[in-house]
Amino acid sequence: MKIIMLGAPGAGKGTQAKLIAAKYNIPHISTGDIFRANIKTGTPLGIKAKEFIDKGLLVPDELTLDLIKDRFLGADCINGYVLDGFPRTLPQAEALAASLAESGEKIDYAINVDVPDENIVNRMSGRRACLKCGGTFHIKYNPPVKEGICDLCGGTLMQREDDKPETVARRLEVYHEQTQPLIDYYKENGVLKTVDGTQDVDKVFSDIVDILG
Ligand code: ADP
Ligand code: AMP
Figure 1 (cartoon, rainbow, N blue to C red):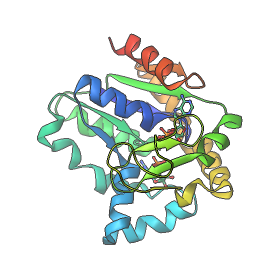
Figure 2: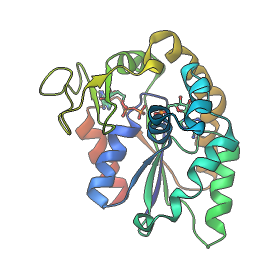
Figure 3: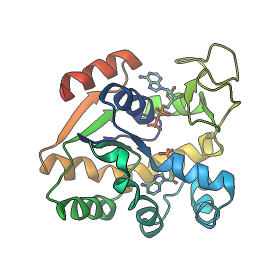
């Protein structure tokens, strides 16, 4: 099963993608997590990507496609994957479709987690992420058992630099300009499914499971 998560930054794509990956036993592939891992270890890709990420801009397609192209070849992708944060532009979606078409494959579901902009700022300002394992929490909606500590690995939880309010506004603009058109693209492809992302995490997930079966 090949699944794409669509939705604004902070809509809950990562939260749902982790639940999907665990239930259907497929890898969760997050380009944001891969960029952050590269930034942390100071790779040349990470250094280039950081410039864009810190400003709330998208990393250029060429860099992003370079980053992701080999990931699908991993042995763990044999039964599919759930993509979180990729594709984010039409050229990325087209490159993905072309690469899948080479082996007669296609995306099965594009799940649009729909959350209006008004809710996004709250979601992002309360998000706390574990830099060690990528675990995501929310100080109010999904708090860790112990404040500031990741339930999953005991790592320290941090506010992402790009979750500060001024950057969030920019990221939302970029989303509407560059990523939202993918909703129509996948609708035309006949694979778009929309869920109401304003519901609590468990309800959003049960709606997704109803779609995936
Ligand atoms: P995305 O991957 O789309 O950027 P996340 O999954 O990281 O979004 O979620 C953004 C923030 O909102 C996190 O702090 C997360 O814990 C919280 N969150 C996710 N889903 C919900 C939900 N259904 N209701 C309330 N808060 C949520
Ligand atoms: P995320 O963790 O998905 O919110 O991604 C964090 C940031 O990484 C984004 O705001 C972008 O700057 C960058 N990024 C992640 N995925 C992509 C992508 N597919 N294309 C371009 N930039 C991306």
